[in-house]
Length: 391
Image 1: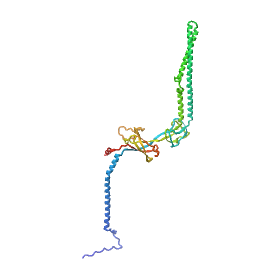
Image 2: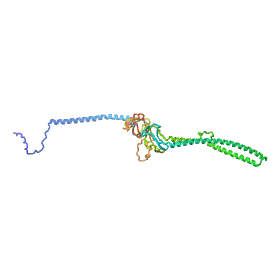
Image 3: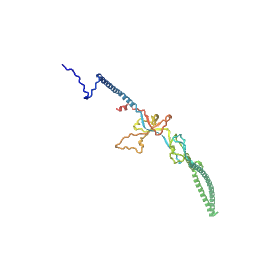
Image 4: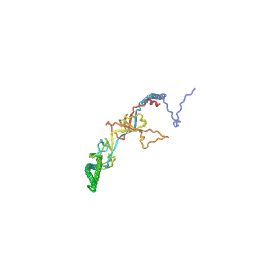
């Protein structure tokens, strides 16, 4: 007969347990529930990944079609960010030297064409003009006196000619009387000498008249204002008047003056010395330097959109005005010389000018030197042949 099971006796209180107490296990139903929940989440995540993968595969053809369409229909816009605003700039100067008397404009002031900018002291130039005018009047009097002298010479020649004719008559008469031995040889010699002297005087008067006529330009009735000496003196008057006029410096075109404080009343300016500068703000253009490979379909007259870095949310419109016939490298001080042998091909940049429409006064003003981006609408898309060339 089997012995009944005995319960193990609890350890004595004074004895330490041999190991950690066992952790009671959760009911069997709780463990299976957590495992089923983890499996369900994993399967749900797997399904999402599969749907995402198949969705991406499904979108790939669409993406390729959109990219192909964009490539085929695009490419007609040539954009370039190596571009800057340019304007007519001129250093205001004059070709006479003098002391600045007045400055009639201020820094960054807008001026119109013909407006007075500054003046030089006109005293010395007024004196030179008065002297030239006085010389002109004296020249006119001299020419008139030469004409009167020529007329007097003609009268003297006529009188001397009459005297020579009288002497010739006396000479002929004395010659006949000498042959008939009516007069002496001494009387005949006296008549002969008188005739010779008067002929010499007549010839001298004629030569003086020819010289005087040459001084009158070969025309005894020439107008005083047409005589070469008068024209020369008149040219001196005109030059003196021009120099006096140039003491008043005006604007050659409308624009804005800058660097005006560089001159002030009392400063001496040599001829052709720049006083300050004038910038034309009404006629501006953009100077761009695109690569030579970007100019394949760029032609003058094509529309251009201009974006200025200073005003990123605004746009200006313009047209391609011209494309340089030579690359920028051709005008360099030391152009690159690629000789035969080992060399590296460098893409050249060709200057291009874009005329900007600045008639819209609602847009802010442009300043020369601003950085811009230009987009030229060439009207030439890439097309399908270029798409096929990618493959």
